[in-house]
Image (tube, rainbow, N blue to C red; front, side, top):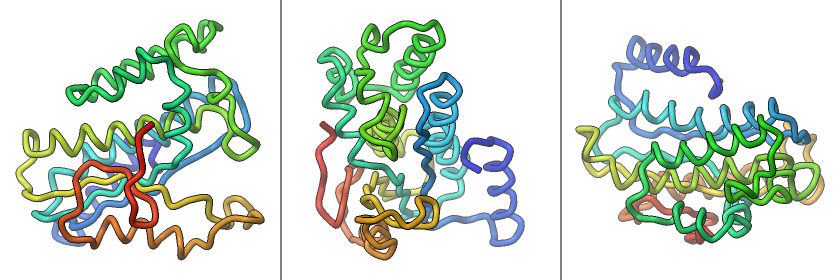
Length: 223
């Protein structure tokens, strides 16, 4: 459960107790898209899609081996959300020196703004995107996946300052909209196998550029 720190910590303990305490590949395949624009939906979405990914990586990274891979499963809807941000916020997110604390601060400001009943545009977010592109890409999903894409770049840049494992590659991957049980095998969706291929490309490709966003083996833009 990516929204539960206790669950993530228990997963690490199980790895240490049953499998020798080392990890070669970590795939963060968690995401919710709620058809709801409430404050609770905002918090639940970010707890799972963004904060859960960050905490999982922070918790598991110390046991990753040399030449390991981390894949943060994301979405091109994050790119769409980036395009709709204010120019000031886009400039902040794309700053190569942005820290994870500064990134989290931006989302904390968004949550506080919604909590106070104010317009998200006052902190640079477009409410049309935040309220969803359609019934599936519903409220706050795009903003949370924008966060995953930028977090990936920060984690890749800062890896060797924090951890001992060498040559670790961290990628964000868009598997595309896949027809699965969770969406009742929605019509027009890609097969789960095709979506998985995008993830496996980031796991197995040698000399992959670190900190980038991928789909079907091709690099995607952040905006």
